[in-house]
Image (cartoon, rainbow, N blue to C red; front, side, top):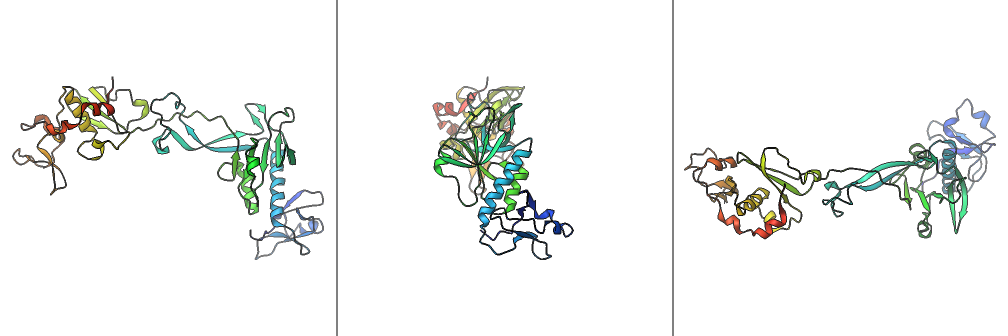
Amino acid sequence: MSKIEYKYCVDRDNSLVCIDDITDENRCSYKENLFCLQCGKEMTAKLGNIKVHHFAHKVNTACNGESYLHKLAKRRIKEKFDTSDRFPIIFKREVPCKDSKSCQCFDRNKSYSDGCYIKDQLFKIDLKEWNGRKVYDTCEEEVHRDDYIADLLLTNSDKPNIKPVFIEIFVKHKSTDEKINSEYKIIETAQIKTEDDIDSIITDGFREGKNCTLYNFEPKMPFVKLYSRLPVDRFVLFKNESTCVIPDIKCNLLMSRLKTSSIIELNINHKGRENKWLFKGMYDSFKLAAIYLYKRGVHVKSCSLCKYYKYNSYYFDEICICYKSLNLQSRKPKLSTALSCAKYVFNQELLSVEMSELEEIVSEVE
């Protein structure tokens, strides 16, 4: 830890004095009235033009800067608690969709980007008052509880049976495993290296993952309704025989029709992309839906389903090998060209996918 430039000391009344409060005009009144918070020795204000303004011991001493930071953090956090109407802590938690227990789409193994969770949801509670009721109203230093000593202990003066909260100041040593596993609620500061680290706690409050770690807190999670995008595509067949595929529909739309003029809508579930058809390019969601319908006796026309629409190694793409004889301007015509094409023939090779395999990933929306 680098050398501490003392930003705080105390006066004869044991009140904290910040170097920012000392000016050239008032420094004389503090001349014989400043003492080290840690060792109690006399201090003087250094207000030079080169170094950052700070307090220094009048006589060289072996005062421990780490102990000073520890004592200062306790002092300032306790004063913050005692003088404030609110004492908030902000949780940073993984929050699942509120429908997670009943939703058929919920997957605990999903990545956070899939939408069933919010990974870093922030929500605040107040340790002094909650829903109009007093929670903790007393903050004491160095209090024993069972086999442990709390740097600061928050309690309810009217209800001593309410489990207290330990506030632990991490300057050099973290809380022991025994204390963490004691089931007491613990707020442990992030490592305090300078007075600025204490300032952030006083200004921002305790923020989990930023300036503190929280142990044994089980806050009531906020209700969050998330509309997760699923690995499910929607195939739509319209009355005029045109088609479309809507990728990655949201979970709340899984069992609902998406198009008022559709005659058939199918869900194609991509979960488990190791399925041989989904990775080899020959079969995409559209083809899988079309093959499923063909086996059910419903014939969908699309150039991509035609036996004359084939992969060409020269172009590294699928093309219509009849585009010249059909006087088409492009070797890759609009796929809907099949609806009026005289040479369209369904590619029977596509039917190698078994119906039992299709039924595992294709389902009809009622």
